[in-house]
Image 1 (cartoon, rainbow, N blue to C red):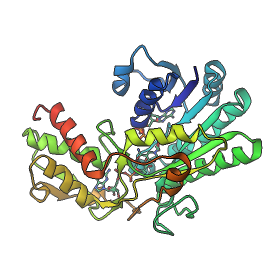
Image 2: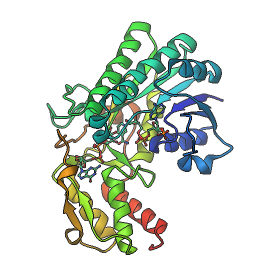
Image 3: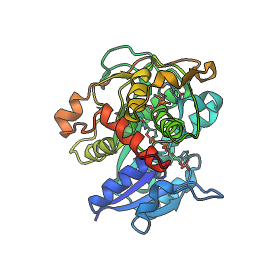
Image 4: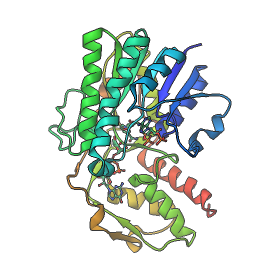
Length: 320
Ligand code: NAP
Ligand code: F7E
């Protein structure tokens, strides 16, 4: 039985990855931050099947202890301050956790478990003001937020530990991926939840930012499979994971409101406070390498994804 250690297990991807690895008969250990309240909603259905250990990406000792005690075969570093707007208000913390935190996990592995395989959650936000379209593994980075910049650091330190110490380290450059478990502040979940609230008569309008931004949106359940596949290869490499299809935020509104039989134009207001200091205007990924070398392809389309999310939130609000 293989053992996987997942940092960020309480997040969207952590919960899907834990489920996926349990299905492959792994012993799954999740690292969680100490908190005065339990925030394990996304893990409740796996209670008794996964183990939890305390640790924080800003604390080296806790990571050393976690890796030393768990003895993982695979380490998935998913923990991060992951919300882009927060990274302008908390740039120092974002750099500490999303950037330097990667070095700390790598150091914990190098010192305590060098034979383990390591996955780093890199991001399409590293491409930012894009220098090539579509974006692939060789596209240069031009990040546009403290979050994107911290991810570039995390990406290159992962490459560097692979090259310096001959460790099995991979970076997955994942484009936006969503699900009914997505955090409420991200645009897809904000919209699916508000559509359901409007349908239930609990709110009247939704305030939005830049509707022209374009993203390559996929389903989180599909993307965690690619993470695992990367660690099953003979050699460690980096991969772009995306659908190759781009939509605007306006398209997303259209898909979500239509799924509930409504027109978005009747409910949406623009709030200038939600416009970002620097925007990533348009992203579209080329996952040819992942398809060719991992055999990975996405299964859920953008339309199916938004339908799934709206249906789940309408059920939660009692209007499905
Ligand atoms: P998420 O839902 O925001 O989850 C982030 C996780 O990190 C949570 O479990 C959080 O724990 C944990 N965390 C935050 N700060 C920490 C710290 N100091 N020490 C330990 N744990 C900490 O993010 P996600 O959507 O699942 O994304 C997973 C990873 O992929 C992140 O690194 C993200 O940046 C990256 N990524 C995401 C996407 C996407 O579209 N979802 C695309 C590319 C890359 P709490 O529950 O305690 O807050
Ligand atoms: O914004 C626009 C906004 O916050 C998408 C993270 O998982 O994916 C995510 O980062 C777009 C942006 O995701 C609202 O300006 C308009 O252009 O859902 P988002 P993100 O910033 O792309 C990457 C790959 C990650 O790595 C990150 O961790 O939507 N937008 N109006 C809005 N966005 C939000 N949140 N709220 C709005 O009202």
